[in-house]
Picture 1 (spheres, rainbow, N blue to C red):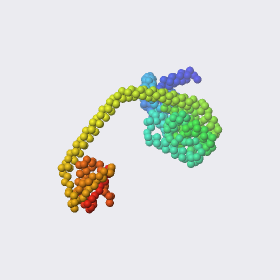
Picture 2 (cartoon, one colour):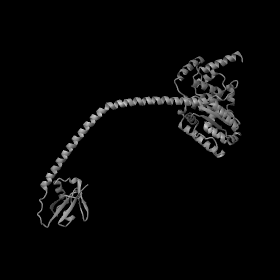
Picture 3 (cartoon, rainbow, N blue to C red):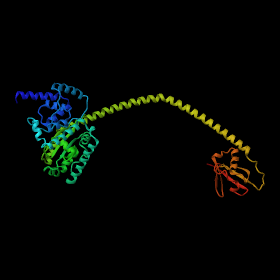
Picture 4 (cartoon, rainbow, N blue to C red):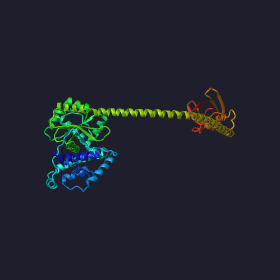
Length: 461
């Protein structure tokens, strides 16, 4: 390598290292997709479109001119300011490629040549545009993904699982039936890696891989125990996006992906593509767990530390709150006792007053009835009936009434004698009937019995 090439490489490295992490990943992705060799050129192109990765890739493939950007020195100052700001912003980075190597060509073709072949590169352009869309989606994070797009991806995952089982049977790794981001979040909660399988339905190796490898019972058990298995077809939008993002060029394609603790961007730990047997895939998975298992252990320990810290803090908060409550209870105890004592005194006084008012009301009512009640008819009159009242204690009182008198007048007589007629009813036998002062007071005595004697028993209501 010449001295000039060394200087150019060092300049590229220095410029790339000076970028914030999110813009650094944008630049690396743009250079990988477009095969651009100059970091400065990639930065200028991305800056000219406001760091819109999808727009930059689209302009490059179409051969259109990029908007004019500011001089490089200004770009450097702007990037340094962006670096400071980026430390205060949270975002989702693109999928980091740690297990995939990408080669680059010498230089980008001329604009005129691109315009000439742009028609023939239309399919590739669409694929790269889809990749840029996915990367932009991953930059802004899962919360910004529209609900319809998420539901489409989830439905595609469910449909692929059903299709796979209908073609290859029920023995297979347990499919996580959600979108890719769902699988990442669930795996993070379970402290497992996501094992991604991209299914190329029209690839000649796919049927044998599905039939002989993914249905191997020993491998299936190992995957279910150690991974969250997520698969999708390249016929789906998410499958096509991930094919470009993972740089999958041969099939079958397997990738082991995780989300670093405390971060939101996905990271490809290892990937494997092309023909493979079940033993070979098992060995690959075992080696990956051995090589990267510390990531999961660290995540478990970190969660345990956070749980212990939170538990200690909660226990301290509970103890502090308990002490406050005890102090408050002691301070309130005397006040509550005093309030209860005053309330009881007020209740007793109120009941006393109410009882006195009730006694006075009954006394006035009885005095009024005493003035209004008819004199007792003389004995032996054929139009009279002797009313006998038996108390529950067996005592008995009698009085003569006219047969035209009503049962209400009998109640009034009892009221005058101090019996609370609101709480009793009169019962006669042969036939047995109950009479209430309010409801049955209109009954005449001759309607109850024609005889000269009538006996009533007092019953409490």
